[in-house]
Image (cartoon, rainbow, N blue to C red; front, side, top):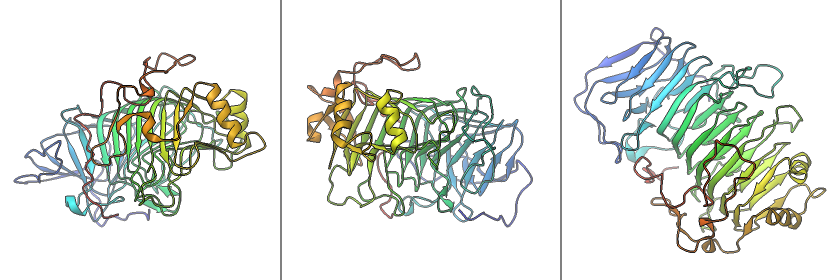
Length: 446
């Protein structure tokens, strides 16, 4: 995004208080209370707590500096300023505490009227930590914020996000330098990420640049670019996650994937390798919808020397392939067993498996290997027997009686971070999305 120049910057950590008689009726699942208007801008240099009863406006790029903790109470609604689009940057050594509940989620959203909101109305949230990356020089986070991240403290703690929604984010400084819904640069395993939904983001939903942070219960809903993007040596663990694509909406200059993963942009052998460990994901693509935009791509795209572990997951309805292994280095890692793709259920509109380096695998030998390690392939998405996974406004990812997703999971080789389930996919017999999520798009103007 072009660097924002503020006409009047307040002193570091300042807020403006102005009386406000009543908030708008904004979120159907979390009505706004009555309180003051609080404008958050500039630098936050000391601990600060934002109250749920106030209208919080995020104005311009807000930087939480090292040593400071910014806390949002459960039920807080944060709206971006319309003219000076907001972004929230938690620098190394700072913390963000945004712990909502299923009944009172914390919502970061556009400041426009409900029927005028579009992806890219504001920036997003950036967490920067001190965990290691595979960069030999100190990396600077993308998005025009100009801040470094990474270090040697893999158990670093950047705070806690629970029951959080991030809506209509994703502005860019320049092509290839965007703010995602939630950007994580060198974030350590001491950080808590649970129950987070990113909705109609104009770039990636979640992007992990190095680091070791783990997460559970993540939702990428109608993202333009990639739903889960891994780079620069990220090697955390994620369990229970959902990707749901809007057939009509995708990045016009890039391709939208459920996962896109690189070791780095050059596909080098820099270490530590990018190697996320994933279990119990449900990836839902456009599924042949007649309105599917051309740039919808793959369920999983592992490329540029990235390693991967994908277990007990569902890949359904992607336009061009379910699993795509791209490039010799990533293919060799899968062939050798360093990477794993086990006990997954795979369906795609065109082909379930795609090898983009035929010196190691062909499409058919890639599929043979996956089947030999407990994966199942489906020609018809209905055979997976999920309740209603492609419904954009009322999706239901729960398996029905007789679904192959109700059994067949294996956690052999996975550590104690992962809850042991019998089911494959993000949801078994209990729907953890109930109550705190919002599946009703509030605008179609994209």
